[in-house]
Image 1 (cartoon, rainbow, N blue to C red):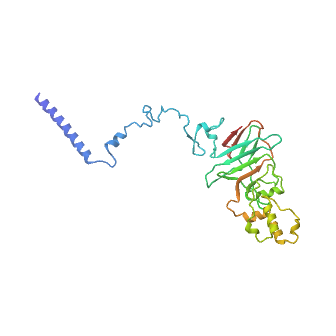
Image 2 (image 1 turned 30 degrees about the vertical axis):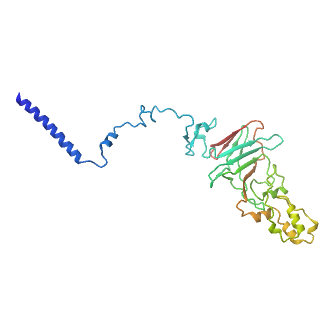
Image 3 (image 1 turned 135 degrees about the vertical axis):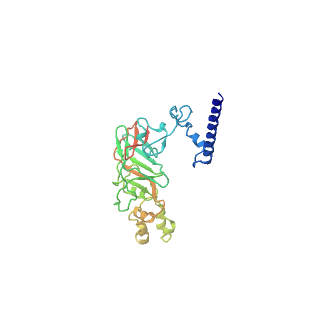
Length: 303
């Protein structure tokens, strides 16, 4: 009996001694980065996947109203409530709401107008040539336009690139000069010999008094009496022997204005005009949709 008790004591002491030796060895050897907390962290339940922790796990409630989601096309967040009826997130353009639409349908006897307003980054532009405007019963593809209209009238058309705060007007009438235009500060002179409908802006630079100070008083008075963008009348009696005055009057036109102001920092306007030559809007009510070149929705306008 005594032998069994002694044997049990020896076994217990041996186990305790072995445990002490192992514990001491572990304390002396600690692998890099291994700590008690690190070991425990491997057994902790992450609140991001714990359905009982109230986090974003299996029991996470659907997004609340106003929550933004990411569009795969533009990698930007969009409020689901902003997506128009009949479309889903995959239908949304990278330019979604970067172009704003307004429209005036006019009537049977008057022209219609669509305006597109650009809201790109300050130093960037949005190329809208090839985009489609789609109404309930018709549509129109945005064409090219002349960026800088040359006095010769031979400048070719190029893509329309809208910068921030630019406006593109699309009229249902036809272009009287055969091309679409990026307006500039001299373009009003073209209205003297071309019937624009609607009328383009008549806001040309006025003559600088220092430019005409060497001309006769009668010549100066006549020049100063001319309205903005107005051409001088032909065969003026007082010009019979006033060659200097005649030479100056010969420059009061689009070509002369272009030559004097082409390099002005504000020469080009923030307005573009396209003449569609067709009425694709309903005179009463319509829903106008704008699609980019990939057929993705940019914006809508209803009236």
